[in-house]
Length: 295
Ligand code: AMP
Ligand code: FE
Ligand code: FE
Ligand code: ZN
Image 1 (cartoon, helix red, strand yellow):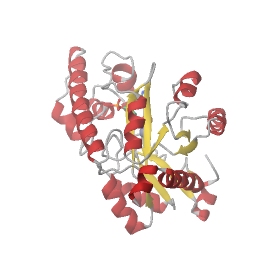
Image 2 (tube, helix red, strand yellow):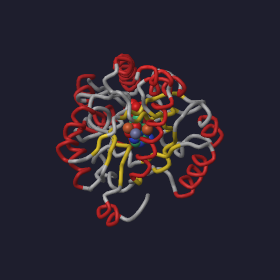
Image 3 (cartoon, rainbow, N blue to C red):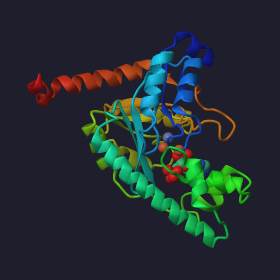
């Protein structure tokens, strides 16, 4: 976390580049997120829905109205050596057919996976209607949090977290992994959309060796600031970024107020990091022979 909340409000030099809307497993609409960002005096935000870009246009329009800069982004699910690896894409062309096709496919895979999870739950005595879960997912890609919401609503668990701990969390009896794709493929896709690829929350469950391996596969940067990174982790990740000449990103990974508290506004990064991203993109564009040829 950088600076006190008072400083953040006064200077208006802050950004939160990790937010989820109701287009994936967040609670707020893109418009509500932008309104909150304006209230918190954030200069720039990025809504990085899990495997979904459906909220970006609404966010950009509302951002124009409320003077909040919206960086088009996405958080792609991939598989690492042991755990899932999430890759963040920033400044992507969110209208590009390549990403729309890929996400349509992934969405279908997520739906099939949800059916498998419901089947496993049924065998454990928990009977949920798929329509109910789809309703929870709303306009976006379906995920385990929507199943947890439905379980809670039907009284099968006492809390959202209990649903994960007992049933659908990693390695639990009703767990089903997502379609397997590699971090390398996600990075390639983000690059082809003209965006920058970042490793999301490397400090949560990835081993240090895996983080170091991932720094060498074409990432542009790593996420250093995240609510689940303690100060030592942030310190180590900043060192890694410097050593391997990687950009830094960060944010609150806010999913709204499902659990009561709203994380947004408490894990901001300096807007200077956004400027560094833009400089990198600018340099890449001027350096590209293809681009030069076209001009
Ligand atoms: P999915 O993309 O369907 O695998 O769902 C992943 C999302 O579920 C994460 O982004 C979190 O929002 C949430 N999640 C994962 N594990 C847990 C957990 N143990 N407790 C609470 N929420 C979790
Ligand atoms: Fe999530
Ligand atoms: Fe993530
Ligand atoms: Zn996230």
